[in-house]
Length: 379
Ligand SMILES: Cc1cc2nc3c(=O)[nH]c(=O)nc-3n(C[C@H](O)[C@H](O)[C@H](O)COP(=O)(O)OP(=O)(O)OC[C@H]3O[C@@H](n4cnc5c(N)ncnc54)[C@H](O)[C@@H]3O)c2cc1C
Image (cartoon, rainbow, N blue to C red):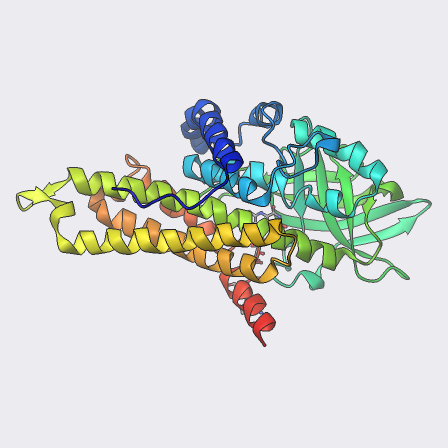
């Protein structure tokens, strides 16, 4: 008998059912080809946009669904269950790619950028990481120098999800003299001096797009700077706080799929004249996996509810990200172990779950950084 459902409102349940149907119809059939080709199926953006599932928390004024954060987490979870790579591209666009435009952009910028992003007619990426800058965002080296009403950007960005397929990049860069600190810019793909590097050869999440970007004398008008000059670090940190919950939810999806696969295998596989699920050692693994997964889900949903109540969710989001992603990594590892040799082959999906979950403890703040965030708030 499955554990009782964690409580959701009627609206959240309907949202989850609708997204699960869309994922089954449009995502699942595309996963194998996208993973093999290591490309994101870009046609999913307008499909998700037309169905009303892109940037779901954005207000109706710009064409959004006005859904709550928990619904957004359900979307990430359902997508993660089908394919963490595809989830990564869609979710990056909906959270860190566009959230700063909504939170800090002026009305003209919101009207210029958000309706197309919500309909999937534009694709955003978030470009903070650089070859020598990962966790320490304040050390960013990309420059943005004012010149005749424009900003001229110079630098390199690494590991950028959606970088190769984007129409717009949200770029963080350090200001020139008199504009110390980081600022954020929406850089259209066609801007002069914007170029896309080769694909990153990734361990997992192969159905997401991930490249480096080069900004070489890249000129963007001042009207494309989001928020006040020099406030970029604060805006980045706030965007990442929101993004973290969604990465955690995506990890729940991957781990949920791995757990289901492990249960099914434990019911079928026979050794020593009985189902392996009849061995206590396997039962204990499954019991631990189910318990930790439920705890992770409670933490993620709780963090989303804190945000939905309008309270500061930085601490619960860091706890949820830390626990859910570490749990997902462990659950996928145990699921692979339960599959024995078959788990180590590409004939079973569990090897993909194992590779995919591994990313989630690294992106949008590593597990070590989450612990620093948590400890700083405690002390
Ligand atoms: C597939 C993929 C997609 C990505 N997508 C994006 C994207 O869309 N946009 C973007 O900007 N970036 C993206 N990234 C980059 C990602 O956000 C960074 O990898 C992450 O922030 C960590 O930075 P780093 O890899 O440089 O690790 P580093 O910061 O170099 O850390 C290396 C190790 O040192 C540890 N460490 C660092 N500082 C501390 C400290 N103070 N205390 C204790 N331990 C510490 C880390 O936890 C880690 O274990 C992506 C990465 C990957 C792999």
